[in-house]
Length: 595
Image (tube, rainbow, N blue to C red; front, side, top):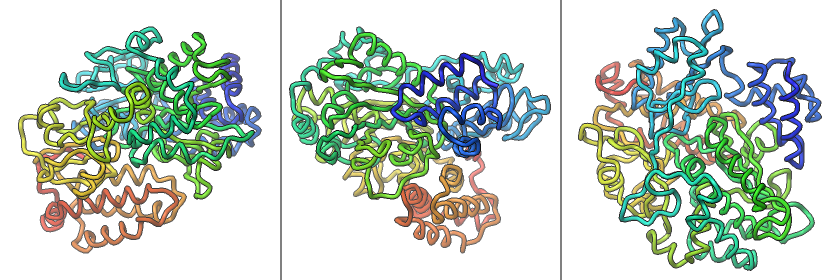
């Protein structure tokens, strides 16, 4: 079934990991690209490489959406999560259904085309978005582009739509995360020309404890959503012994509304690499593994090329820069499961298993990747570290507000005139973020709702628009900073539909391991679907709140909590919208986006 070239590449990938199964997801991607689809025969061909039975390989593959799409030569994958729905994604799906004569989730009888609705593709600022097979995203899609996509499978596969530069920092801000003026620093020379790889040399003579303390004193809090103090996390690693130690870098940003890490990887990959190296000095790691979401085709390519450059230049490998010993950074590709953004779910996936979160303790620092001491950090988190090393903790704290130091990359999407990723100090007012930097709403319409940090964070009404975007300030306002992914909805928007789209995401992405999550997310989604269709009752509203309370704090990971926060947040803030659906037996917002 598989070509000699595919077998060669699988063997090459296996050699990069201490355990063969670390290469399993990569091998499944290679096999799917070669054979066109995964089958029992393909699984049988792969199984011997990993010491697995055929059904074990099939079981792992069954967990990941990217391995389970409709069979067709050209699979047109339309993102239908909130940011894309706000910008007309449902219209695109309906247009494609009309053109191809099939319903979403199916293939044409001749096997030429298929339509698949997928969850967030991580390009919220350029919504709506379509991905064809494993090609780079097609962003800001218009109906005109559908003409090319549906003319023939070959044409659809060949369509390219260069990604626009959507990340920037304003003139009054001295940015340090993304390059200025639309530049992309993709080579070592580009990066070194702007001070790159000086921080690793400055950090090299320092002790691991001193590096960790410096970053802790700076007040850097993780940018992946939880906001834990990064330098403090590094100190949780046990004393150095004979065991290998790892840094697992989470590049699986899949939270709808979140699309910032992609900007670092595609525009400034060496910054992330240098940050990883310094973090690994602090925790005395033998190697680092970057787990990048499967849909990030361009980011994967660019980071892979940057790592190759580093090996060729001697920055990585034997006698790595700043290490005086062997040090490696490897990259792994996920396959579309949001739950793999949860740190222990990611570790399971990196080991070639289903990405189901682990029970804790033990925590990753004691038994993480391949049961070895492991620290898990986010892409943006490590990307702050070189500047902290070069400029010091006091400088970093001056960039933000108390308990929220430094800059962050705010991703703003939805009904704004200029969506994108803006590098700003923490503490900026939400009003300035939306009105000053993103041009306000499209057409100057009134704001109805704002999600401040990805869809799992409780929604706010516009009366909170002057809140500072920081950890403690947003907590006081009744929500959380999360990933800094801000979604803006104007006064035409139906809040029942918004909550329905989010509930659909959580129902789809639950790993199914915990009953409260598996059954709770499904029940909330079905209930909201009934309310939105006009057949709900007032009792349903109370039941949603009750169900959410049964989900919080009852599961292995925080996924069920996030789903509950989202549902309760919309219901608490916009109950009149829900009641109007029940009373009027349908949606009372005729101009709202389609869900």
